[in-house]
Structures are given as structure tokens and as C-alpha cells.
Length: 221
Length: 221
Image 1: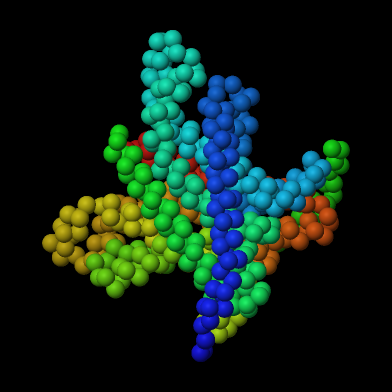
Image 2: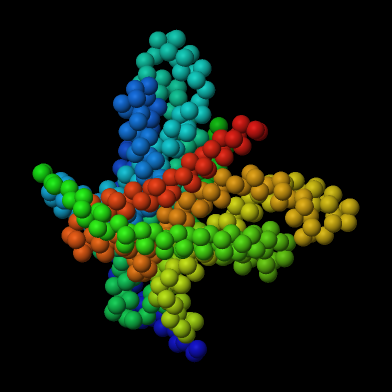
């Protein structure tokens, strides 16, 4: 069991891994932004009095929370194009899968934050003559947003880890690039250990940074 | 945008999908059962005051939580055998990485529960002559197990979803069968949709149960 480590063989292809890392970050950021928009709309639908809005929103959330992400990736890449008659780039399919899936989770974050504000405040603001949008924007969201920071960060962290699944659609993110480097160098041990460390550094740094932001925000309140 | 659904394909492929479902459930039960017990052991090391136990346990937990689970699967299948000097079957590699991943998350749940009990109870139990193991079993765990239940069910749900990644190592579980069948019949829309629904039926009861337990515990407090 004498194994000769050869990390330099991998480091010679570090540029490929950096390209992958950028691909990962791009995919994560685009999906977070779109996911938040989807989540906000779905949350408002779920809180609506109209059943026609509430039921589909609930079904959307439950469907995404109870099915594996990899199924969504393949579905958007291989199945949806058949229905709509045009095919997607791997990046587009991955963004669709990630932003709808995280949208379902963000919707729960928004909903949880909004319902955590007592009903009396809605009624009070309404009594002052504010309409639905004004109450939401001026009264409810400013308070609720602070409570949403921690679960929002958790969700975005999970989403960033899930971007690795895009490798199965041949999108050039970190894991996919590692597979390419592996096929050049035949050094799986070094390649996969290197990217595990890269993921770890990025995610660990991001989560600690966010925890600091969370802490600051919680002290303001 | 005229698409004729072919339902016969679904009937034809159902037996194979069910066979995949059995493998999914096997993988799930195996990883959850061992992951829970291993997680408990790691949490004991994690709360230990001895640095040589505590340090590695922190490293273990953080490593598994801050890297994508797909990277862990790939690492255990392609890289680990090199250190081990023996090839692992896809199922073994998947079971191993999912177990270790689950154990890291479960360790944090156990730790959260254990440290939530006031230190005074440890001292009190010691004062009446109980050993540490006895205190854990008779005093600490009975109080926290119920409170940890929603966290563990959530973990179980996550794990059920994550088993689908084993398909990327060619473990013949549900998602793998789905991909294979959809390329055989050239009917990804029907088959991948059915795969998603089968996962939903498998996972939804768990999350329904978890939400109920959570609500009940919240009502009691």
C-alpha cells in the first residue's frame, strides 16, 4: 500500500479547476437571485386568501421539497425540451432546476418570516389606511427580513453545494472540471481531494462570513 | 407543441422502476441506521473535553458539512480505493459516503441536544454517584430525544433525496433505472416525471409526519 502522491500533476492543471470554480460561483449566484424572486412570488401566493393562488403555490413547494434535486436537473435538461420544443444549454437547465428548487425553499423562508409578525400589525396598518402593498413594504418586510437572514443563508449554502450536480449535465463547474483533469492525469486521489479542499475553503469561508453578518444584524435589532 | 403522451411506456417500465425503488430504500435504511449510531459516537467525541477527541470530531463534522455530497460520493468511489488498495463496488462506495455524511449531520443534532441540557444536571448526577455513561442514558438523553425528533426526520428526508445521487456511480437505484429506461424508450418526459412522482410518494409521508411532530411539540411548550 505504498502510494506515491503526485499533487504537482494536478496543480499543473489548476487553471482548469479555477475555470470550474468560477463556473460554480456563477451558477450559484444566478440561481440564488432567481430563486429569491421565485420564492417571494410563491410566498405571497401561499399567503393569499384566494384558493386559486394558494393551492398551486402549496403544491409547488411540497413537490420540490419532497423530490431529489438530481431528478429536477435531468427533467429540465431532457424532459422539458420535449414539451416546449426547444432544447437548453446545460447552464440554463441547471439554473432552472436550481432556482425553482431553491425558490420553493426560499418561499418557506419568506412565508415563515411574514407570518412571524403578529396579525395585529396588518390590521393596525390597514386601519391607518395603508393598502396591502404599503403594509407589506413599510411595516411587515422591514421587520421580517431580519428574521429571514439565518434561514436564507442556510438555504443559499445548500444551493451552492447542490451546484455540483450540474456536472452530470456536463456544465463546466468545479466537479466537472475535476473529472476532466482526472481524465488527463489519471490522478483521482489528488484531483478529488484538491477540489474537496477548494469547496471546503469557499463554503467554510462563506458560512463564517455570513454568520458574522447575521451576528451584526441581530445586534442592530 | 403537440405532444402525445405514451402511457404504455410507463406501465412497461414500472417493474424496473420498482426494482430500483427497492435499492433506494435499502441504501436509505442502511445509511440512516449506521449514520445515526455513528453520529452519536461522533457527538460524544465532539462534546468531550479532551482535545484529541474533540479536535478530530470537529474536523470530521465540518469536512462533511462543507463539501457537496456528490463530491464525497465521487471521492469514495474513485479516490478512496487508491488508499485502500481495493476497489469498492458502486453500492458500497455510495453506502459508505452517505453513511459518513449522515453521521456528520446527526452528530450535530445530538450535540445540540446534549449541550441544551444545563451543566448542573451533569454535576447533580455525578454528585449522587452516577457515571457519565449512566447520566447520559438515564438523565440527558430521555429529555432531549423527543426534542431532536423533527431534526432527525428532516435528516431522513434529506438522505432519501440524496440516495438518488448514487445513480451517478451507476448504482441501480430508482433514478438510475429511470435514466436507463428513458434512454431505452426515448421517452424522458414520461419516465422522469414518473420517477419524480415515485420519489414524492416515498418522501412525502416522512415530511408530513415531521411537520406534525413539530407542530405537536410546539403546542406542548
